[in-house]
Length: 148
Image 1 (cartoon, helix red, strand yellow):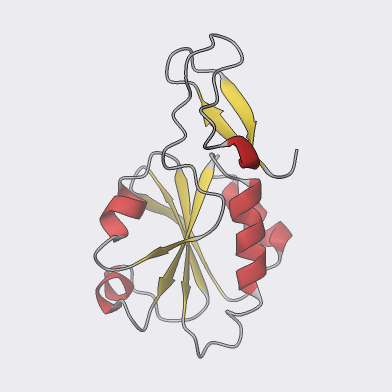
Image 2 (cartoon, one colour):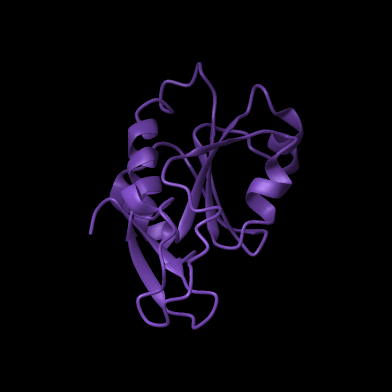
């Protein structure tokens, strides 16, 4: 179902599909009726910086797709709507974040980002995959499998 997020119940472990429009309405688990924790469920890409990177990416419980981009990068611009669509479609399962490499040199150096656009795939606070260059939706989704 498009425009929905998957939220795992902390009480019974059931995966619940919640319409994005109801994420902040206090949804409950379909099985055990416990309140679902929707904190941290994002439906659009989150901007990260050198200062927020550890909290937003490394400490995040689900997989994270990080787009490394720059305003002057011509190949980065076509990726924006695609990443926004993926953030919405995979809400609750994968967090999509964006890092402006010009404004965040520490994180850019830390992960040796040399070409743009670069996508880094994190799971458990570690990079498990990476790509360089503009990719199609199908190509990105094939890399997302490692995070699901």
